[in-house]
Length: 280
Image: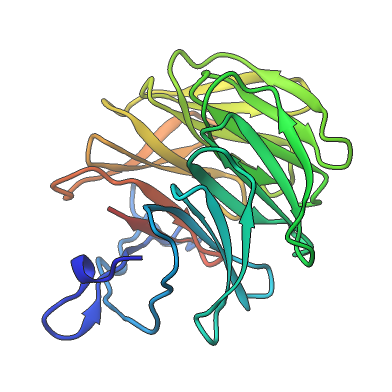
C-alpha cells in the first residue's frame, strides 16, 4: 500500500475526503441535506507491506482487529491491525483478486477474482472451503448478506449472482445492465441490492422477486460504487463524471449532486451516523 502519493507536507495522510450530510435533522434545507464539513486530514498510523502488486480492496473484520486485503498479485492477506503484520496469506486464485471480505461472524472470508471464481476460506485454516463458479467474466465485487447466508457478486459478464454460502450454489441470476457491473451491495435488511455499472446507471433489485425494480439515471459516465444509507432510505453513488450523488429510493429522485472533484471518484460509503466517506 503506497503512502507516498497521499502524504501531505504537514505530515498528515490525506487518505479520504469526508463530507458530512445531515439526513435526519428536522431543520433540513430544501434539499434535505446540510453540509457540515468538507474535508479532513488523517494522520498516517501504519503502512501494511507485503503485497507485490496493486491492492484492490482492504476491509476490516467485524471486531476491527484484522484487515483482509485483495491484490492483483493473486493473493488475499489477513493483517493484524495492532502490529501491522501479515498473519495469513490465502493462495489459490489463478488471476488478479479484486475483492475480499469477512463474513459477519468473522469466521469466513470470501474473495473474487479475474479467474472468474469466488472462493470461500475458513479463517483459521488458510484452506479453501468452496469455489463458486458460474460467472463468465471477471468477478469484480462481492458482499455477504447481514445474516452471512448469502453472497452477492458482480462481474464484467454484466450479471449479478446470488449464492448460497453453505452449498456454494447459485440462487439467482439478475440480468439488466448493458455493461459490466462494478459494485453490488445489500440493504441492511437483505431484501434489496443496489448495483453500479459502466452503463452509467444504478440498479435497485428486489431479492425475493429476483428482478430490477428501479433504475437511477443521472450520472454521465461510469458509476463505480453505490451504497445504501444506514436506514435504507437513500443511496449514495460516485462516478467517473467526477460527482457524488444522493438519491431518494422511494421517489427515485436525485436529492443532491456534489461537485468539486477534478477527477473521478472511485468509492463512497455511509458511516453509521449518516456521514459520507469517499475516496478519489
